[in-house]
Image (tube, rainbow, N blue to C red; front, side, top):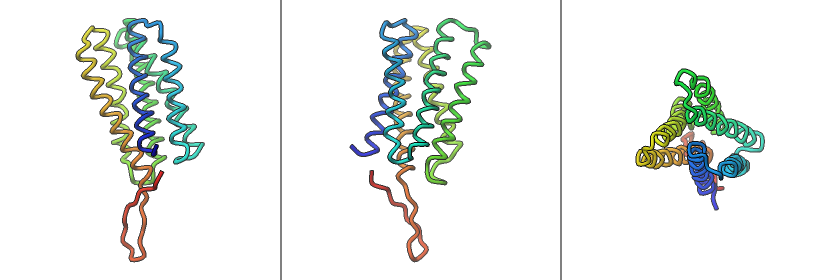
Length: 188
């Protein structure tokens, strides 16, 4: 399986298990503990897929930041489910978005220089959080059709972000002997 397919697979798993955890927190599912363990494993899976391309140090940092990310997202969901007032939710959401900015910065720093716009990546990762929060609000409000529609958009968005990231990792700028430039993709 090539790197693009592997990244899509682990990103799809991330979206699927994120939703299972979200639904489990909201509904009090007995499988929640197992779903959380699987989502935690997914962060290791993402790092393992990226390791051959980005190296161990950067892959380990992804695992650390993404594991922190899912725990912060779970804290936001849990606080919302418990009926925490909006003003009291701010510390939870602030930490989640701060972490997202760190993940976005790490994504940009891992890709070849100039292949990803830092503000674009930051915006997309913040949108990722907003989808999760929106799905939580819809589920708590029993608006299941809205939650499903949001999930579909969330997955399309998240997979596109993953595709953009992996494409940037594989893009190499080669200068030819005549001084012209052409882009080629590494073959993984």
